[in-house]
Length: 540
View 1 (cartoon, rainbow, N blue to C red):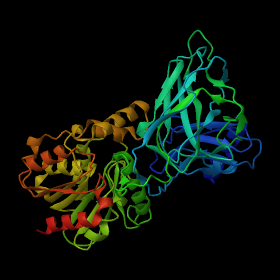
View 2: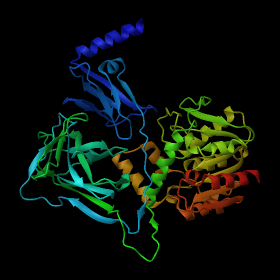
View 3: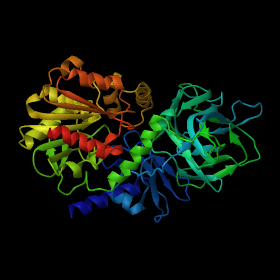
View 4: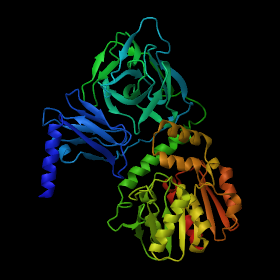
């Protein structure tokens, strides 16, 4: 009865408060979903969530109208007004992305600029209203069958007046000459305090489009700071054209409107036209994608397969309460304990090709690292591998184990090395896959991407800073490890080859295995070779 009364008074308060409702948008890990769009069909009303995932929405007069929550990388959430009033705290589920196999042949990708690269004499302005932050405006761009988007440029009218603006960039495919579906898996946020030409570097977002002849790029004004002595003004230059490439809508579920014209904007791309090639006496060989794109394709394909397994969501899974976190783990098989530690932004399911194999020989203990998978993190501290090693120690103590074997992949390998140094008496044998001693061991281009993500506040910043600042293991420290260690890396790993060899040479009782034709995702790409090699090492 008390719950019913509480809901009744909450319901009445919402109705009295000018038909508005406040709430939060979070994912399954209870982390805020930032800059999510909230829209209502056939309405001009919409809203955004802020950096804390909080939102405030004016409710429609039509009680039957559907309220749609959309965010990059998540499935749309559709709620009725009654459902939202009952619980204004919205939980969104991750979207599973299917990526088709990519085969680009023969020639290297060419580079090209598409769009209006200079400001013509006759232009007009498309203005943005600070009171309508959900308004979305953009243009259509013609592209090639295989296109990688590298940068977007646009022109802010010089008469604009602001201290700083924050824009959200959106990219869609095209159907019936209008935006159709979002092509983004994460937010692209851009801040500026200048007018004139603006450039957004998109190289770190790995935007590779296949079998599309058009895309739409739009912008939304999501935040601003006014000048103290001027009213806020912000507009983007456009020019008249015969084609209706200038697009506008009030909010994420509103109807798109088309106008004659296009924004003064252009894109930098790499491309391959596709189609037939000239015959050659040499057999045609597929050309590798760049390392990041190749790894991304492999990663998502395996992530999709892993999500369909029981691993990481077993009914037999358990938690260890550490006060500032709850660490989730699953146990499979019987025998000598073998601990599996996944990588950054991963989960137990990443070992979907290893758990069935090793559980035939060992008691496999697969762990979701703090702040990953089902494990929570309530601390306010930055992540460190030392902290992850402390969590591992607590789990081993909880399970009353004296000695364990450990297989650590990527960040899991860094945690495993840190744990081995702190608790050598508890480690029987150790396997690292794609581990590093410090950030200098990671591909320089990837480190720059991480730094830019921190600047742009995209991705899980806490996890990104972990890779930028840690680990801090010195080669001379590794000389203290006396137990057997197998050091593994892929031949095309993002961990520098010299760095992997330093780890091997610094540990006296270690073996080195470089697996050919593999990237950082060896457990995904060559599971049979990897599993057999680890098994031989453990049983020797």
